[in-house]
Image 1 (cartoon, rainbow, N blue to C red):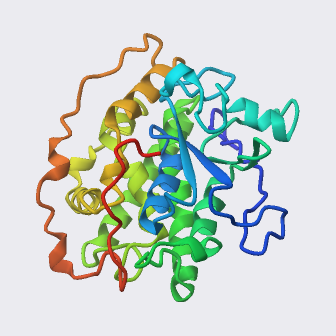
Image 2: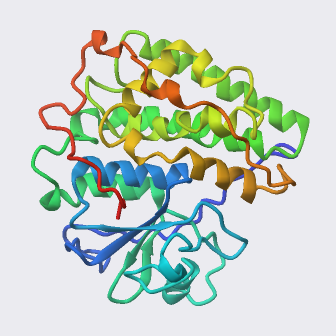
Length: 322
């Protein structure tokens, strides 16, 4: 690793919730609670996939506030500051219930076993795949195929470079501890965004002609780009709205049920600008940018594609999101 380069802690609780329960946690309606923050891009993936697959009635969702301290995410949005299902004030409590003194990151998304109050997994990359592959018996009629067998190799290939250069790339730029590390991350980020723009010029979605896991993963970074990463993380060669293909692609997804209706720009900004005091010592949260452009026509329909394949859009989003 180069001097000053940011390295993400990737030590996660990798226990899986599966149809056959081979890790001790079988898929069961109502047994588990998905804990998220609307500010977090990694958690946003799980929120989107849960909604697209229609798992709201089977997998409840606890929503942490947008800010946290060094100890943990907190349930400060709930009455009394407690999650109404788990009865805890801090997500840390569910991690400690599983592993006393847990010393890795207290991260979202996390899935908690409600009867025991213990976190089962916080492996964000695996969580969304398992929601697609292991929870099929509980999917809504018309749920899309987000990780179809015939496209998996290509989805995995796209996901790998998007994670390395874009999803984590913005963090590598933002948390770089040296000019050299920052510039290397900056160039890798924008080189990859240029390649993605070329890929999406003639195709509506990243892989195949429908929305897949690959689109979910890229979207959650793109939707935060102008509000946070452009300024806060110094990813400022171009704003998203100055990259025509990616801007149209992101608006297309934003206007698709299950995507834009999961986004809270105010919570996103509050998280990054208030929590990252090493980057923004004052904690002042910017008022901009204007987000009205997200609802403007995108013109991507002309490329064809079927957002949900042979399936259907999810229903109207619940106001509380829980």
